[in-house]
Image (cartoon, rainbow, N blue to C red; front, side, top):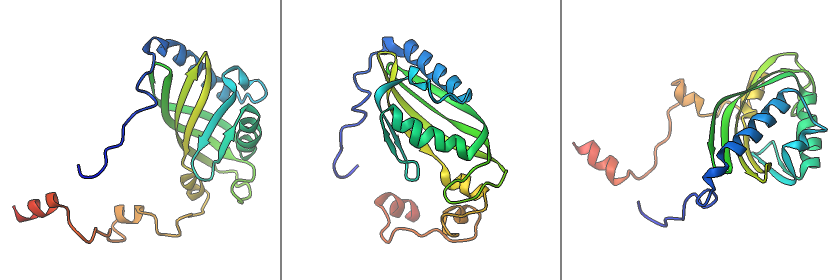
Length: 187
């Protein structure tokens, strides 16, 4: 590898592995709470000043109140009959991660689109840090472009790389081949 080599996995390097079971209990309880559509009492699982850091379109929430007011309430207003399904969960000390989907009905305004009544799949990934029995940090990736596509709106305007997968467009290549590619093409 050429170039700089930044230090990796700094946040998880010193995790206390004895906390794994406690972390698991907090996350499993919180997911049950989300599936029960709890908002006002969800603080049972989150520290008061926790950080929720989402991808573009989701925003960043600082503190429980912002999470409730600027994520949970708008999300539940846009999507009813919602069920969260973690397809995989990983636990390591104070850390947990999951990916999965929510299945819901588009029953309220979402990203400027009027309710359609369509059932949608909302894919996500979550990474949590749990300290003293509460979630203190939550990094989130929610696939809003996939949701919007299900509602008939292509945010990429036909330029999504899925066109490469379908053979509709030819993927560009770097102007300069790497040494490995040059050697392999000569063989």
